[in-house]
Image (cartoon, rainbow, N blue to C red):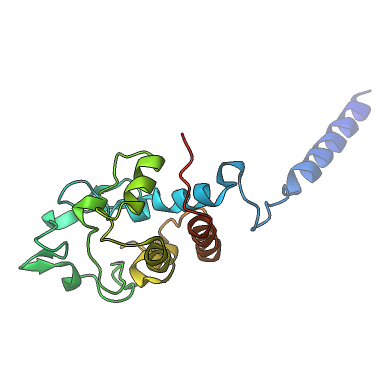
Length: 196
């Protein structure tokens, strides 16, 4: 009886190890979560991500990191969004990421204008501000499409590099290709903002 129990125990353990050794199937890379079904949802998933929000504050202080803490070294907006005279954004932020120091970079690194400060706003409020010519730099729908799909500073969000510890920064939930397609569809279909 004892031998049978022992044999049964080994068989059970072997069976369990086989079950646990099989990895669950990975989701398809092109699969879209239910919360990102429409082009508008996809656009907002990027725009509302901290990679974008950190440079769209409603005050004069840029944010950093996944937790959106205040930018180190007391960095401020300055008169034109490029920092104070003695400490311009371009002093540290070059035209590309610096993987050695972890300082992110893209051409014309700067804060968004105060009129485009989005932190604390809902998706519909952000989308409304994006389309409001009195707030968006007087951009038409076509100019918004061009800005969102071709501006290297905007597209930096998809290649944010590594932080000062060499750890890759979190990217938005969709790829750059999916972003361009979603923005194009949303704008070309009238840039409709659904009710929340």
